[in-house]
Image 1 (cartoon, rainbow, N blue to C red):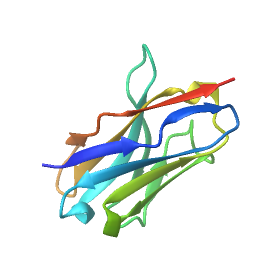
Image 2: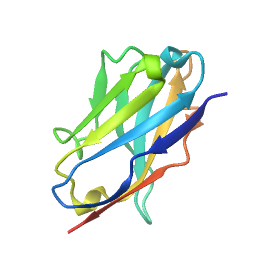
Image 3: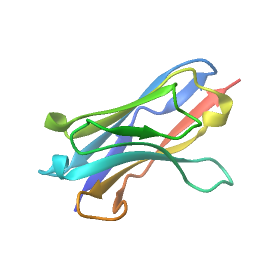
Length: 119
């Protein structure tokens, strides 16, 4: 079992920045690829960014590409999402997720952290 706890959300003005953190409770954090997803009110959950187990490979949704950076520190069991130039349409609950190296999908999810961007 992997427990994921997100933090760092909040209220920010458009153009501002936030850094989300996700702490994982596992002894084998490097056995997991990690991802960030978000869900806005009335919308389906959508992919934001992913990072492989070592941090050597990342991928982003077009809606955040160039404005966000995903990173991880395996020694701290933590993955981050730095978000810059925030827009009101970035308002959502942001979720951290873990996918085991041998799994086909994300099997573990955090409880989410709210990000609200005011115009």
